Image: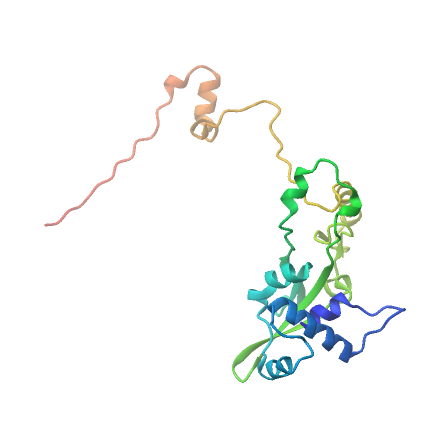
Length: 230
């Protein structure tokens, strides 16, 4: 939880967080995530931390997002290709979102801004056991070498690509108009076409049908021979 606490409370010109402050905040977040029946400053919390091994990222990633109302991008390191990559993307799901959609007119101020944090998970082996270490990422663009969209924080572009400027500008304009949301659109053909794969996927039958000669089509006949021994 220290990585999450650090990501939610980054250092700035006005405020720099010391390690003891981050630990204090992480204890409070742990109580919230696990719904512990005692306070983060209690003696029970001290006893718990003596045997606490941390949270399994695969089991608690969604729980952390829901309890803390945050979005998470979790990154890993690829030893084979020697680069960092986003291996898990967790989004907070608002249970009242459906109710909000039923309201036709809602002011922009009514929508809560969900914090976005970036976490790096590094795995190591200690005494035959795999251990995961989590770190808060201060600059994911410097870590991955990619340029991320400032609106959706999801789409990434490689500045070394020859079409980088064109694709990046095109995406951010479209993404800004969609308010950072992924909008899926179904593009239909201008002329409606029937779903007849036995015709459309057979060029010979297509040709004969287009010329009114489909009666000349003679499909290849196959036979199966069985060799039975009794």
